[in-house]
Image 1 (cartoon, rainbow, N blue to C red):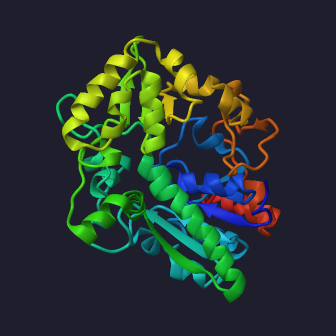
Image 2: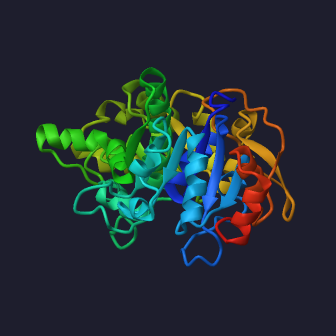
Amino acid sequence: MSFLQGLTALDLAAVGPAARASRILADYGMRVIKVAPVTGSGVDAVEPVYHAYGGGRGMQRIRIDLKSAAGREVLFRLARSADALIESYRPGVASRLGVGYEQLKAHNPRLIYCSTTGYGQQGPYSQWAGHDIDYLAVGGFLACSGRDAEGRPAIPGATVADSAGGGMHAAMAIMAALVGRSKTGTGTHLDVSVVDGVLNLMSLYLDQYLATGEETGPGSALLTGKFACYGVYTASDGKHLAVGAIEGKFFRNLCKLLGIEQYAAAQYEPSRQEEIRRAMQQQFATRTRDEWTEQLAGKDTCVAPVLTIAEVAADPHLRSQRAFMTANHPQHGKFEQLSPNLAGAERNQPTFTLPPAGQLDTDQVLAGAGFSGDEIRQLRDGGSVQ
């Protein structure tokens, strides 16, 4: 699906929320040019593994020395014909390099300039370094999560902050800004804070506290395990089932099929939750996970199997949804990867040929921006681009 075809974004980040955002934009048809530092520039850049973020499918790559005047001029010329730019420097760094919003705006007033940071452009934490787990900590996510064997907040099994808190919010903000630009004719500076995105994920509990003063933690609310109808249970084979029977009709159906109908009316009686939980666990322990899935999942009980990553990759429903596609890599051969997530749109994607490690599209990108052959050679000889 190419809703964003004809639009161009410059991505100055290799990993994290910004890279997640550019992956989404590229999947919707936007031309994404990944701008990396030149090798040997002293910049501590992380290169993602060949299969991460789709392996750079559908993207172009160029290396520019933004510490040099000639390198900055290259970025300025690329930005003149770009629609968006995404960066993930700490606040103030891009401006000190001479590639901040105000500097780029002078070359293209229509540019959507998206800054992605952990804690935002201002505030006491704005200069803190961080990663996914730090943003989840500050945003309240970890405090409301389950506990490990030592009673500490458990490490989440996904990069929730980078993906849902940062990357998705950045992509959505860029798309909204593009719509706004179609009305005003001017661009804008987007300040995407990953922690702000985590706050949005935690809105149920934060809004509850702000309105009532009631604080939520593990086991203190419906969605954090207070009631037996919402939790994880172990089957006879040691595998697990997720139960989310919140509504009364679903819980009644579940109790009937488990053979514990006497508990259906006590679903939300606080004093009986441990009793109900023990009874449910005893019943789940009598059969395997897949046997219970076969009996319960399609019977309006809100029960689903807890799948491993390998099981997810082989799941027949996900296969029917074309959630996976084939990629071809010059060094690693053919393998599968996640398909673009296009909100239920057609996913009959062709096989993508991924670029080999280190491949650059410098000449093509610069020529497309109007650089002559002589200019490109001079930039290469001077070390401003690679």
